Structure formats: C-alpha cells, structure tokens
Image (cartoon, helix red, strand yellow):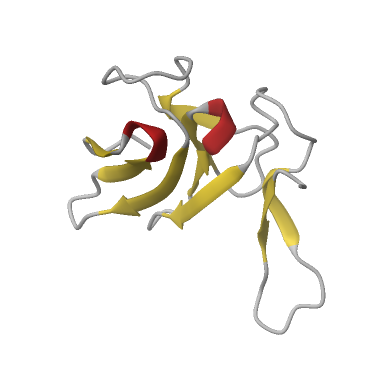
Length: 113
C-alpha cells in the first residue's frame, strides 16, 4: 500500500500526490490505509484515515494535513472513530463519516475552513 491520495487530471499521464505519500504512519504528513475521499467546494480534500481512526483535511499544495474529526485513539465515544471508511457532505456542509467498526454514521456540524 502507498498510503496516499492521488489526483489525476483528465488525460494526464501521471497523477499528483495530494495527501500522504510519506509512508504509512500517524504524523500529519502520513496516512494509514486511507479509505474514503471527498472534496469540498473550496477544494479541500477530506480523507478517511482508516487505521489512524480519524478524518484529515488537506489543502492542495500542503505538505501536512490537519485532523478534523477523531484522532483520539480508536473507540466508540462521540469524539472517537473506529476505522472510518466513507465520507459525505450534505447541502449544509455537515460532514457524515461512515464509522465502520462502530457500525454507525457520525454527523459533524459544518467544519470551519
């Protein structure tokens, strides 16, 4: 596994690393088994960082991401995730996270940019 998110422009011969790409790990420069990806209307890239039990946000060109939900160890409390795998926004920009091993979907109010 490459533990990264790639962006491919239409008809491109090579992709661009937009998140992770520095090996597997838990630093702000790394991902561990990224699963779900979604992009907001600002172009910010949200990644379900499954094995780190968090959702990270990366702005294009950044070398580091930031933790926006989770990141408090694996668990089932409201501020914890257990292997998130999917992401979605609603029309009010609330973030929904498929919290796989907790068998739930978590809703987070609009996240400040």
